Image (cartoon, rainbow, N blue to C red; front, top):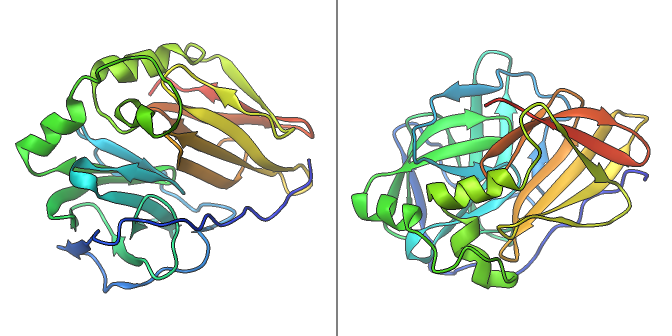
Length: 255
């Protein structure tokens, strides 16, 4: 599969969503037309610590939050010593959305609910809710563990519930084993509503793109990944282990 420029999603996002940053955030600016990610990330892979029960916003994707708000991990930045991220309002790109540069310790407020940035990685940002009620809402058990497709799967896709995460984990290969994603435009589906697609393969450049969707929301868009790069889906971390003209192979990590 030859490389192509990934399309930009343009659908409506919650107009009432308000995102503010303090304690290290930058000045709000208009979002660019596309997600920007360096072809070769300089590292470090992660800074900060991920707390138990933190919610994981995956690179290039959106996460729906309690109260109806959403946030995206729009851009990863690293200079070999430190790392920061750009968070953007909404669960997918829309012209005119505001965005903020954050680092560990930055507080963001989405629809009146406050979260602290605890960890920034090349592949995810981990947020911790301030309010106990929001922590409880994210950890709540869904009414059903069966994915039915579309927005009804949101309780399975945007959650910190340990039973849901365990079910998602069980749907992947064991630690150290491989998952092959075929680059023919096909979709691989998993038990808790997640689907994965190879968006492009460029063996000449040694790069590929992997897109993930859940509850009709793009929850990750890893562009320009190379062998050795980490990616995460449904709380499970993998490393890209091989790129061929027909497939991307990812190997489940032990963390």
